[in-house]
Length: 257
Image (cartoon, rainbow, N blue to C red; front, side, top):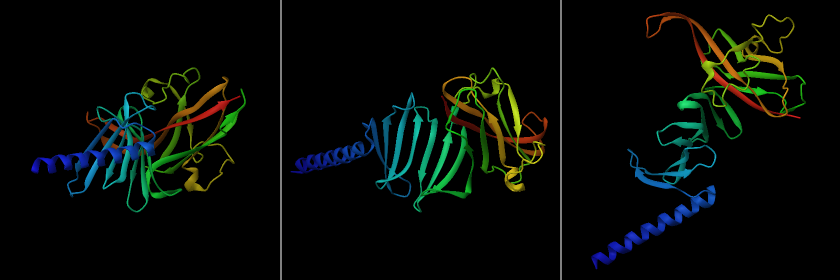
């Protein structure tokens, strides 16, 4: 009798897991590769599901649940590297979004509640321009540092590949140190008269320039937004540096007719 009860319980557990898995597959449209059940330190039941990624090569889509509630989702490699956007869901409706690039490099990060971006968390930019452009026609691009890494930073500038090296910079920016760049400074530092579109606060945080493309099809406005803070400190080699920098890697698709 004891064996029969044990077998019955095992069967119920298997059917329950199968039913829940089918429900999740129906929601995601993906076949689960691995499901791991566990318990958190506070005694909450946890579940981690890995889906084979059709979007990012050699990465899995990981979904983490506590008591059946989705808490975290991201693309992750077998070695634990995250790529793309990682979403962390909080109980108060806030979603933390962290964007990762090459080798687990954290790029920009921010928080939203519904359709609103919260101003008390993150380090992120917005980029505005036309989504389409004509061949060899100039158009305007605006990059705005919405949330600074250091509120007391001294200067902001945007570096972009020099002519002839536009296609050398990889989409994940992993070779950014191998590229030569030109520089565009913020509105408050570019020394161009009568171009103050913003007050002193936002002029310090705004980059404005015109560009164009000589190749039809998909092109990218791509470069690095550099936030610089003047400082005198010793690095690990006891060398004195005059400033410290925080990089934000910027990319926007432009389709050229």
